[in-house]
Image (cartoon, rainbow, N blue to C red; front, side, top):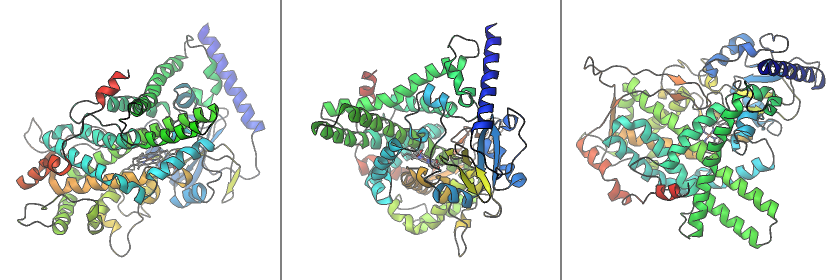
Length: 540
Ligand code: HEM
């Protein structure tokens, strides 16, 4: 009986929503961008992607052109599959194309609504972005972290050399070590498991699922959030209540850690500590309680957004880079030849020192490898959806206020009219007289929502790529059954951030001299600092 009532309630809610959208929302005599014919009531619900959404939506381009639309329960979704159109809307009309969809499930019920990728365009969004931009918005701002990045990358090489089978975990550790030092002044456990990295792994996994478009009915029919938790069919509320605990822990724990360190006057300077000090001064100068609470929320969640954004994304590209080196060994050979010729190879067994950011200008092929990694499998293949806050007309098409506007970054990176042989990994496409477009210009998103970690990610990626190539030979794994090398599979999992399924490869130092250079990390940077993991555990 209860199930029947629920089904009836859902049908009535859908009907009410549909009639509202049909009769009360803005109309125009102009057509929407072309797209598949919608069914009454449910629209194109049945045409939503089942798995990798970037591949699914790419099929719309030859059918409907570079800008198309679909509708689901009366909500309009606009698909953009050309960088020019993305720039026309997201950059040239950024005042109206910079908001985000309201996600009832991921945002309100799971508690991620303070995270920057979910924030609507407004004063809180501007406050986060201003603080982040001062910290890592430009190349010169990011240069303050050059030593941190250099040290952590060297420690990463050491871990990979000592235990090559743990590659993916070492990459996660590298990304986490850099961003947590910057955001919270936290030193991870260099050798064992780290509680904050484990928390990030779990919480970000849940975040990815919670914000997946088209998965949670309550995002389309917000009224369903009022269903009591015990009703059959309201399982999403029980999931949300579990996941919101993780989201809270993810934002509260590192924040509490910084406050504790500051109270004991032992905090390592960080994004959070600098802003909390500023807040203390505002308190002394008589700021009111509401302003203080708002400021502290902004500090906590903007730091969480940095830490969340920075710990998952670069991991995806670095893991792709290692696989690419296995699949395309001639690229590895050419990049290593460039490094050897620039850094010097006195006896033909690799460079005499480990290259760094200061060598980037001369390592043009290695730089092209980085660009090709970004293009070959974009980290955020469908971008993060934008929403327009005003009605708009583009090229004769009506784009109603509140549309969800998605850029298919993967398709842009594989357009055969722009990139020849788009499925091949060819760094040389970015060299010579007529290079193909630099994917940095669209793989980090667009307009006022462009990735705030772009410069940091770029320097981190360059360091990992050039130092890995300098010191390691990366080869196909050996099959235990046949004793022969085999080609690992290249499979990407669906999700906001595209992650490769785990694969195997062989990683060995290119020479004995390079092994010693990798081992010398403590001589170059001092012994590793004491981890903050135990302090964090005390906060539980
Ligand atoms: C290879 C590495 C990375 C790539 C390809 C990447 C790509 C992107 C893309 C496509 C977006 C959506 C932009 C849009 O809506 O138009 C985004 C947003 C974001 N990224 Fe990154 N990102 C990377 C690394 C990072 C790092 C290292 C951080 C943190 C330090 C970070 C933090 C964020 C945040 C907080 C947002 C949300 C911005 C907003 O909603 O205003 N990302 N990123």
